[in-house]
Image (cartoon, rainbow over all chains, first blue to last red; front, side, top):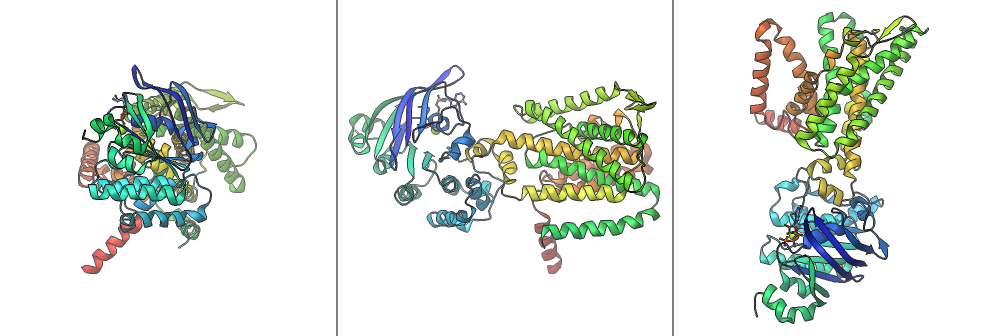
Amino acid sequence: MLEIQDLQVSYGQIKAIKGISLSVPDKSIVTLIGANGAGKTTLLRTISGLIKSKSGSIKIAGEEITSCPAHEIVKRGIAQSPEGRMIFSNLTVQENLKMGAYLRKDHANISKDLDYVFNIFPRLKERISQAGGTLSGGEQQMLAIGRSLMSKPRLLLLDEPSLGIAPILVRTIFEKIVEINKNLGVTVLLVEQNARMALAIAHRGYVIETGKIVLEGEARDLAENEEVKKAYLGSG
Amino acid sequence: MKPQFTFLLVFAALAALSFTMGAVDPYYLTVIIFIGINITMATSLNLINGFTGQFSLGHAGFMGVGAYIAAIISTYLTTHGMSSDGVSGILVLAASLLGGGLFAALTGLAVGIPSLRLKGDYLAIVTLGFNEIIRVIIQNVDFKIAGTHYVGGARGFAVPQLSTFLWVYGIALVVVYFVENVIHSTYGRGFLAVRDDEVAAEAMGINSTRFKVKAFVIGAFFAGIGGGLFAHYIQYITPDNFTFLKSIEIVVMVILGGMGSTYGVILAAIILTILPEALREFSDYRMIIYSLLLIILMISRPQGLFGNASIKKFLAKWKTGTATN
Ligand SMILES: Nc1ncnc2c1ncn2[C@@H]1O[C@H](COP(=O)(O)OP(=O)(O)OP(=O)(O)O)[C@@H](O)[C@H]1O
Ligand SMILES: [Mg+2]
């Protein structure tokens, strides 16, 4: 589904991504774990066209998207639930969700998908006409994920969906991610600091350190890896 | 009620009202006309500043472009065999307003594209500069066709009187109807999304650059038409009608009305047009009182007269409020 070759991204003089290659197979969940400032958000934003890469290539389903603007990339079926959520604070929950479906032409199916989102996150339904900016942090996170689903993506990019969320809710959100992957066949690239949870639901994993991939493999194997345990799982 | 139906109803009411305007004292009529033009100006600026979140301080520049181009067209037509009365007069004004609007829209495109990299204060400064450039250009243009002066530089430009109550309010109605409909359409939510969070809007598949340019072009188009109406009402325009002070006046209407609330902005346009007139008896102190009142209004309603609430919510609240009394 997603193929990245030797990608480099800089912010002025700062090299944030220093040659990354990774691949996300169709209908799988792949997780990318790494410490603060490793370049995870930068990578996701580059994939969705919000940042321009310096060199390298990004392909989705074989098609080169490296130099496409963000709104073109959404059309190719990539949706992002951004870090910091980026909710439209003056729009209501429902309007936010509809924003996610902005490019869709099949208007008839939109309300069905709206129901699907409300089904996964009943809390959003209760708050349907509340302004996005007044939701709690966790509710905003649900809204961001729901909104990204509304574009009916083939590939979902999730940037730290567990950030700032109560542990009990984190579990629910991860269950929902699995559900979306299984039931809707959406491919997921999941960026996480909560490595334990991420590796538990992912098929494959990559570990990124200061702009480079330092480890990759089956999620199961990574979870057993001594270095990963020490650095990211808080035991060893 | 269907919006198209409301539109027709309001238009019919305006048409009926227009017959009574002959009996209105000319001074009051002028104030009424200026209110209508200011509604057009403020509502169109609201699309740029309020709904799309771009801070433009150059709206009077677009107004000036529209005013002068429209005046050139009508002067040319009326000195080349077209009468300014009856049906012919209607055609002359329609052609002039359209020409003025389109030219202003082109100017909007020219200003909009390079300005889009700029945000907030920087954009405000650039648009303010544009406003002054327009004024200086007009000040230095003067030409003659077949013995008639056009533009007239700093001296001013005599324009045939063609704008009427129905024209001014009919167009204000069209602008309000258009902006309200666009903003509440699925497509138009793009403007609001760009205002709220540009990056997130891009991530939803919205081409934020295109929306920003569109807001500028549409806003400028209507401002140009407003300028055309103005010129053909007061019959004599000079570059001083379109300084940045006029731009600021319109911006104040938008801010006081509550950035992004069409009905609040209309109310603000009405109040801020009447207020300086009502204060005339205070002569020298007029502007001081005006400014003081503005400050008081802003402090008491920092979110604008209506804020983000729609007229419906406002009326609903008002009704429940009176019901409990
Ligand atoms: N706009 C920017 N300008 C300059 N440097 C930036 C910018 N955004 C990110 N960086 C730098 O790029 C590096 C990677 O940042 P990035 O946000 O991708 O990290 P991350 O892995 O997502 O971290 P976290 O887990 O804390 O979210 C960091 O060193 C950061 O300081
Ligand atoms: Mg990050």
